[in-house]
Amino acid sequence: ACDTGHARRRRLGAEQRRAQLIAATVSVVSRRGYQNASLTAIAKEAGVSKGLIWHYFADGDDLMEQAARSTLVALREAVAKDLDLSAPVPQVIRSAIRRAAALRDTHRAELKALNDIVTSLCYSDGTRRLGLREYEETYALQATLFRRGQDEGSLRSFDTRYLAVTYQGAIDTMLAYLDSHPGTDADEYAAAVAEMFLTGITRPDEARSAGAEVNRPDGT
Image (cartoon, rainbow, N blue to C red):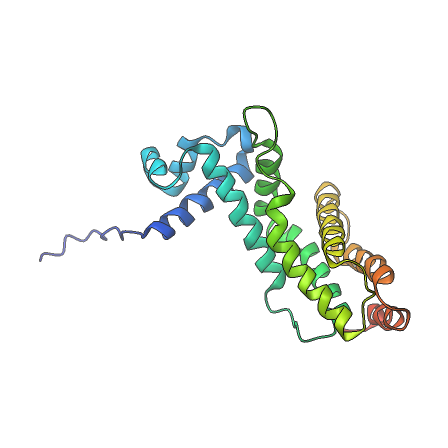
């Protein structure tokens, strides 16, 4: 066969194409906002025809919903990446909160897109399509960590479901505050959140040990 000098377009598999369209959606929503994120703009961002979207998603709302869910998982994985889960649970919690605070700088576009979609995507009756149920997997993973801390004796015996919901609520509030107050020191805020949360759930001797870690020179 002759070499025409043109690169042959690589055909993407279904999952790769879905990921491409989701990435384009996140990019467009983060820049333009939900209301101005048209399917035409998303298709252009992905470099595909608009009609191709319907091969992979039921409609625009389905694309937005899947983009939000995929982004939530990606953010959770970014926080968990390289965490030393074998460390004492209070230390894992402190590190995870610090990494969550860092998302403001490392995943700003994803956070903005996720927030815009969650607050804007509604059913015909006006109720939101996305809510606390989207956190179920996150809650389950967090509850497992808290349960290990209880088994090890470092955490008090609260209901781990309640702990997970409260913990995630604190993380979400922290991220919202950091977004609206860009001059805030993320590490300092994360340390304060960790201190408040751990003081409430650790056993007295563990709380003193966990609090002492704040003053370690390496910040770990």
